[in-house]
Length: 395
Image (cartoon, rainbow, N blue to C red; front, side, top):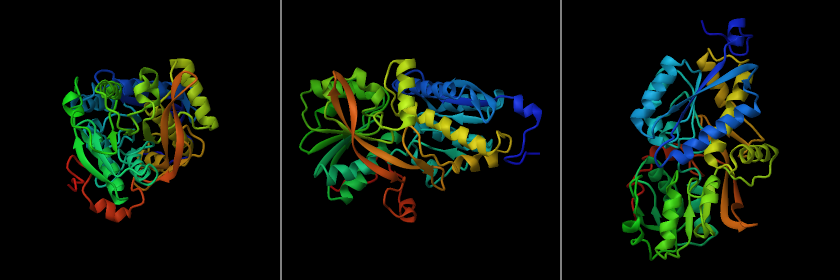
């Protein structure tokens, strides 16, 4: 029989570790982010002395290989062999979609930064919590900023040919066009593209290029963009100018404006501690991938305090997870909507060189942004999910 939330645990449960399974990716173009996910998780556990709600925490890491089949295999191992209480991760939307039904059927809560929109929209997973953002959640404010403050009228978009890319650019396009702009072309290179030349030669005749590459692909794209002699201004999504990549960029990144739910320069006690810990332990500024997992740890810890450390009653645990509301975190204050998706700040950053180093400087904060932007929730959910062809080009 499940224990009631908040009641004292029997002695056997008090000494039994809380088992967290981390689904991440350590090979391929997304490995850059996957490694940071593990770093962020480890730093949180170090800061928490390896404890949550008075119980020790055991972390079990599964490498998905960055593909749906690998994600499902590792999720099954974590649940059926390792008996995990919670799953952190995975990274990519296509990985999350591959495991969603299985994990929900096992009633294991997932805390993921994978941005698949419909996990918290048209096909919600009742055991899912996302403290980062949907794919479009940062891009919708970026579309607003591009039209209203940068006064751009025309744009082209380019990003990987998979769900995260479609949903990013769909969010940007909808808001940008609602504010009077126009997207003239959308380009979709495969996720493994060694040479972007066939796409770069198509860029031109607009006010701005909007890119949403993830993992290590932003480094490759920006270098080839510069080498091709392109001068058009660049806007980017949360992964395009990730803070952890900045030490690997050159001057080609200067001036790029990106939107993200995390900003390394956020001046709060929690973020200062987080940044200092990442620099100390990993000799690099943290980005969204590391911050997202550190914050997921904070959410899990806060929920477990409310359940008295009880992980047996899964319905009580997911209820406590979704009820978490925090004021001081590395991303600022946030809470969750009824679907388990975060409502929090989105930061517009400009890449600059300061004291010889590239940094993202926050130039505007959009406070308390929902996954639905300013749209009516009922109307939004009646529309198709953002896809390769939706919204369609007006031309």
